[in-house]
Amino acid sequence: MANLDDLYREIILDHYRTPRNRGELPTPPATRVEGFNPLCGDEITLYLELADGRLADIKMTGRGCSISQASASLMGAAVKGKALAEVRAALERFRQLMTVTETRLDEGGEPETPDVRSLGELAALAGVVKFPVRIKCAMLAWTTLAQGLDEAPAD
Image 1 (cartoon, one colour):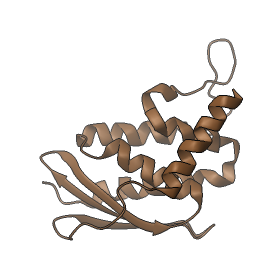
Image 2 (image 1 turned 90 degrees about the vertical axis):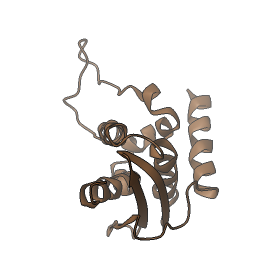
Image 3 (image 1 turned 60 degrees about the vertical axis):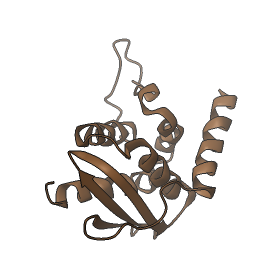
């Protein structure tokens, strides 16, 4: 298990040090949406370009802790170019991963673990739930993406 934790730590640090999809897109046609976590000061601006029912492109700017910035980078890599239905499904899977609840038990009465295999590199953020104060950091980019999808004009 220690090797897996080390791998996850390296993935988070890699995305923090070398974030993917950094930058801006012209608005319009891209939608610009801002997110802010008042608890710790993390902030993000997403630029979403929707075309033909897809998230054709995504760029981001912002600053914050390693968890928020790595989560944003991992999110962009996971959703860029996907159909909007796939993007919303990824949003929901990540939201479930970050949900801490004692009532999620498997048939044997043990705490249920979400299927992290379907998340690819995003599984590196699964350990964040052990630190509830950091969940908002990991969720910032995702809640901002959901807001942007809701606000974006239909293509």
